[in-house]
Length: 341
Image (cartoon, rainbow, N blue to C red):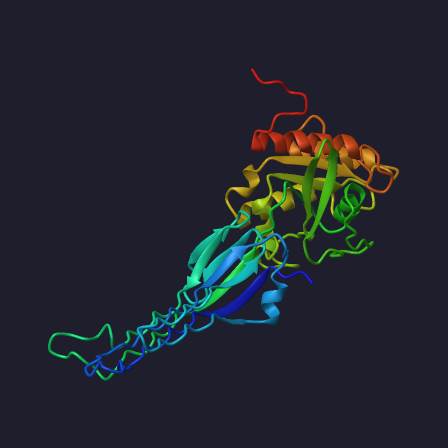
């Protein structure tokens, strides 16, 4: 099950208590104190891991407590410090303070991590408490308590291409055509309720990661429809594929559909409308698509946009080539066979 939000409580491990003991050996009448210090409690660390793709595992278990440190022992033996608790999260997880809402870290690269709670320090044993005026203290210090913190986690999927559009534009069908992903496909709005990821094989060991995002409607940035919960996933994509239904059966006119989605992107975040975008006309397999196509061209101000059919597969491969070129320009990757000088 896909979850892109979670609230958890993390607690650092308690430090081990110091030891209060006295050296007692034969022929050593005044052995003195020899109690060791306690060990440090474990820290709680969140780490970006590619083995998890959702925050669902954090929803089922909401409290994470690191192990405590071991207490000190006689003969000045220091207690063992506890191992840190590593909590795996998907790449692209944003860590926020659960109380203030302040962003603590954006784990947008594999292996990036943040220590969200520190363990308590170990208590001092009486061997380290001895002074010139108190040569044999009979007490030791207790271990310190670990930190406690409430966190809010938000996942922003990282993909090369994000497919956006109004409900029933054909986004899920397109993803199933391009990759091995099998999203739910239906002839009714909001078939896709959560983002879906697919990997497109381009050959030469190259791939494109494509995200099918739930359909947006007017007012989505204010909470209408599925709301803006999934708009944040658009921020991670390098290129947007704006899919528009140009068939006569479209629930919303192509020009209106184009302007509606552009407005919602601008309302959610200022930089989204400036993201590289490829407008694609879909459902040209249905008779009468020409009028809708012309209206779309006028709305987006372009002389021509790719025309595809996600049902028949017409012109899809060439569209993928255009997306590949756009992504390469964003990451400055040379094309296959391109020489260096």
